Image (cartoon, rainbow, N blue to C red; front, top):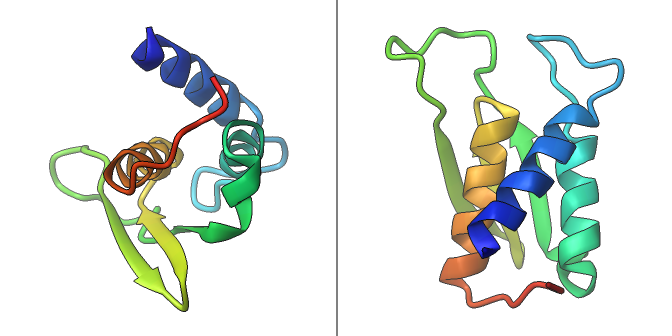
Length: 99
């Protein structure tokens, strides 16, 4: 059930893009998802789209999760990659959500 909820939120976050372009997607939807799901940890995350316009050969999403200055930094080549990194980092760090 939790996976279905996360996928539903992911679809909403991806759909929340307003004036984003393929080469410069907006991360506002991803940040809004964290605000709804983990309001007490919203300032613990930082999201960055990197290499969005470069083809990666296999068409797969890629992300990297790191820690910089006490924040969990999720970098990915797409919005879905950012969401995958967010889910993995929240699970790895045992951060409970509001569901």
